[in-house]
Amino acid sequence: MPEPVVAVVQTGPRALELVELPRPRVGRDDAILRVEACGICGTDVEQYRGELDGVIDLRYPLVPGHEPVGVIDEIGSDAAERWRLAPGDRVAVEPFLPCGGCRYCLSGSYEHCNGWAQMMSYGFVPTAVAPSIWGGYATHLYLHPKAVLHKVPASIAPHVAVLFNPLGAGVRWGVTLPRTTLGATVVVLGPGQRGIAAAVAAKVAGARLVIITGLGRDRHKLDLALELGADVAIDVELEDLVPRVRELTGGAMADVVLDVTANATRPVVDAVDLVRAGGTIVLGGLKGTEVPNFPSDKIVLRGITVIGARGVTADGYREALSIIEQQRFPLEKLQTHTFALADAELAIQTLAGEIPGEHAINVVIQP
Image (tube, rainbow, N blue to C red; front, top):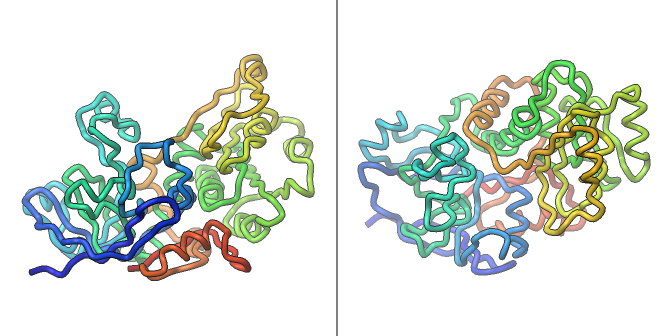
């Protein structure tokens, strides 16, 4: 009889348990991943705190973790042929499970898939849905026939490969959606891992000037952003943001403004004043509330494009893995903490800034 899977199960807000779950049998069309590393992002923090309850279709208990990397442990014959994979191959797993048949999947926008009876995304599927192991906070992960996988080059270690997820967001949100081009000026509001990743992606795309902003407590993040390619880092508690950007751009303002701050609504209003007429704003940070004094007239009169960024698709992840493989940037410096599976709660709290004295950017769980 196969050994059980060890997993962290969330039973409610701030309630995690280390449990054993049965390992499923593999059929011809699916597989089992042996998880080597799973990244943690701000969404994990919101999920842990219960802040996503009622926002998305979240049902407990569930195994969290939507940024897994690992090796194929067991695979069916049809799945091996379709994915062109074999046992021992290392892959990165996308969160979204596209149904393949709804209008969004058929048009290539599978991040909006609505073809399932419930939300089907790794890290958010309840254990009541067989075979239970749907999250990366576990020794093993079930690979559904619809899973979207990316083979990881052998030169990339698993704990570095998990950066495929935040860097993929940086590519999509900072470059693909706003169509960032050579010579562009990009302002990134928020120096978290996705904000820093967007600054990196913008430089790869040829942006001339990349400005990133943060608070005083974000100094370590702002300094790392500069080391990884950002041109200017602004502490908004020390400098008046809009006049400073006007000075840096000679009055031209930004071609692209990306907001990846969580909960804070002021950056959305600032973004409208930071972007040039005809420019583009990308909103990637959930606020959990309405934005007071939203300047819709300015958006209309200045012809500004506003784009909501939901998740990442295959092109972004492929480009992210390519950037990691090229080793042009010391991206491993993004990773500040690594934890064992049994310490998953401490890992989340560390990223959330709940542990005094710790300054986290990218946190990884290694089962």
